[in-house]
Image (cartoon, rainbow over all chains, first blue to last red; front, side, top):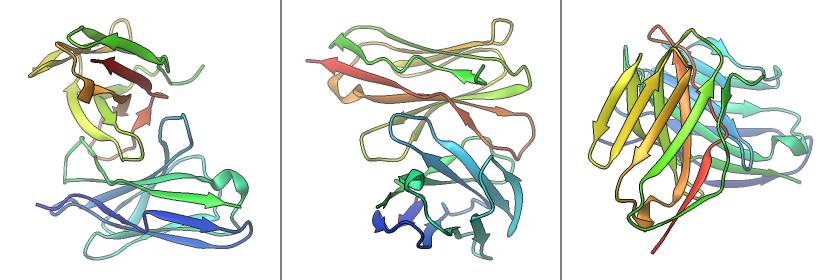
Length: 112
Length: 112
């Protein structure tokens, strides 16, 4: 059984650019969530996808968007990057009816 | 008032000590309570998962939930240097979907 895998592991972008982060969920998991973790903070919920539709969103602006694909993998897109977007971006998946979430190792995004 | 409060520490203990980590919360709708361990530059790893009030034990780890006091705890017995990490409490409302609300995390160091 494979876990949650994220790519890339590290990324440096310039303010104003756009970025796409990718996530492959754990086998059998059909719900994918994305979280942003700033240094020294707990993860903050961005949004969640279930059966390819967004079914929950945290307090993040529309320039944060996502997709879930039929194989349950997912993308997080961030447009017009700002310096404050520098953080660890975590993808988490869960199985149908499950409450425990499995996290990937994250993508560390640095905006300069 | 934040929904979930957690003392960020740092907490330093000698090897073999009993460690007590705690979180308080304000939202009585939370039904699921979790503890995650996060090593440096890694994603959170689910340690313990509890539904509603009560105790749950897994090896050296014991999780307690007191919903009347809105207080949860994680105890680590016979702590080891390999337990050195950041411990995050997380909570979730009822229902199969829904996001996790995290505390800030407590940084634990176990000295040999």
